[in-house]
Length: 56
Image (cartoon, rainbow, N blue to C red):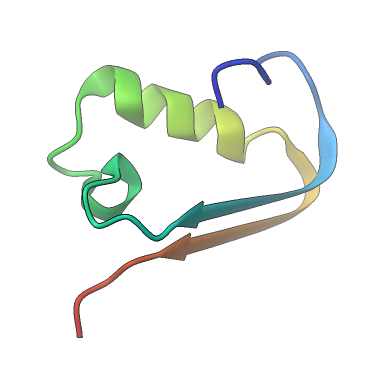
């Protein structure tokens, strides 16, 4: 996520299977972590897939 700033991709898949990943708890994440995920998500031109580890 840190090296794709300025690049574009047709599709991006972000898998966040680790429970401690900031994507699973965005409200509690630090600003830098939220910004990194935003940059990664906005690199997709056509499709974006985000998988999170949500508790059942």
